[in-house]
Image 1 (cartoon, helix red, strand yellow):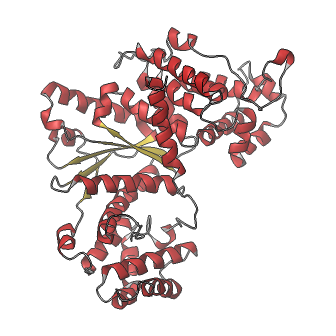
Image 2: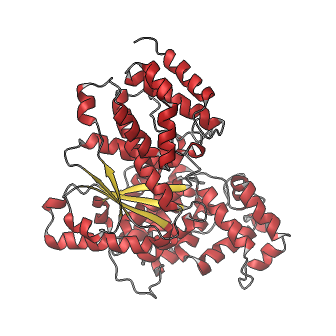
Length: 479
């Protein structure tokens, strides 16, 4: 099965896992800059990459610009979509780098509390809705599924449904409020106890591959773009029949009579609650987590006869943990080659996706100016974000020269208000003077000063922050 579609799907989940594992969420590494009036540090940290500092700074500023708009939209109950525009002469490398930095920033700054991902237009080959559902399913499974599940469990216990037959066994456990609080205060531990630990698979490799392959077979016959009425059932007979019996992971829990796994009353109640109040497909995915691990969750979420309903339910499930999803649709390069019928289908699909995701997501579209006027017209009322990469031509010619006008531009990209920009410009004047027109020295000092102030929750770049920044710049020497 090493080269089966099921194995390939597991590789995709593993990619998400590795991306999440690389994220450093330590608040000391990524302090909160909001008390200073900025969504993030306006200046790049001079990472040890192949890119020169001026490229890092241009990319960082544009990522901050999108971050600021998304942060505000995530706090709104029904945010407008975001239309991210850019010049068509900007090399694709800069655009990719800026979007990747934005996605990385949303992952490492837990104070943003959003789950962001991008979906290329090419994903619509899986279905107008199924392409987005596929991306969300894999990210939900990989991005700490136990913590997302814990958030739902806590809510389901605080407002219990006593009409469910499974509720009686949970009620016998004692105070539901105390149990709900445990899922809030110790989410990973509580889920491990009642649902199983966070493992990609719970069976030997060969059997785990069989599980994924069986799930793949159940998805093969599904229509890419089914007609979906209000009463369309999410589950098909095949998907329901394909459920595997719950099996205990080795070493977990106690055995009951006859060697059967001990009952999991909380898990059974939550699965029933999900089926009754959210989605039978999400309920089936949670059962797959219990029996097979979180890799199976991603695949189960894709097996649905009603992808619109399942996508809306999965988005709502995610927002029990996060403020909002952030979905960025991109890779529209083939647009000029599409026929009019296909263009109309894509435009209609994007509009439909916006309403399917509804209040649970910040909906964003990224495309160069003039490439797809039909899409721009459809989303004329969207919040506009311009990625202009200001100064790119000048910095190509003089990559180490400090331009005060660009400094203001970079501050504005991250600022939450105009007063923050004026105050920071004033406070950074000593650093600008000490840098002597050297962009690298200024950037190193300004970044260090902002982080120093943020770690102390200061309201401005005070004397201590400026002194710390100057020390960091001195460490570069005269070169």
